[in-house]
Image 1 (cartoon, helix red, strand yellow):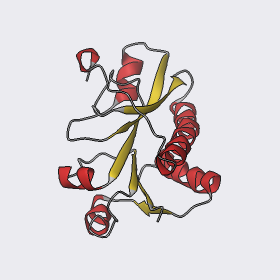
Image 2 (cartoon, helix red, strand yellow; image 1 turned 30 degrees about the horizontal axis):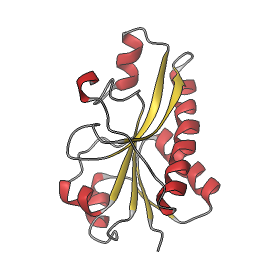
Image 3 (tube, helix red, strand yellow; image 1 turned 135 degrees about the vertical axis):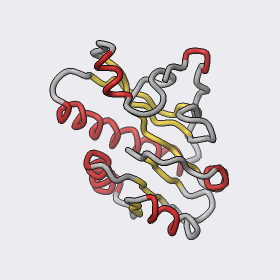
Image 4 (cartoon, one colour; image 1 turned 60 degrees about the vertical axis):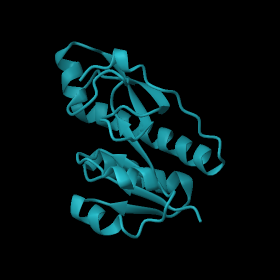
Length: 164
């Protein structure tokens, strides 16, 4: 059974969820809070595909090992790991970055990268978030297709290049 879960609560992540459901024509279960995750995590089937988009809380290692958990991070990992990547890139004067989707592990934003696409940082915050939604929908759709066809390949991040 193809079980897909989407964990997110921010407005832009919920827009990504809505788009993802429309584009992929399959049931995607939604979790919008840490409490909901705690309750639902016990019933999520092993090896389910679980997206964490705009999610701020750490996930227990046992869950990461039981399910296939991927995260969208709005930076060109391994650069700008951690919280506030958009704000920090703007402060640093960057005009171009990326949206990255990677396999979650026990380390913060350090898992294998499956998908990455350029993100333009010009314009208002709402315009940047709209671009993240578009790229996130594209990237998550790619992950769904490749994962369920056993063709999802990733590459290890160069941890010596990591910034936080």
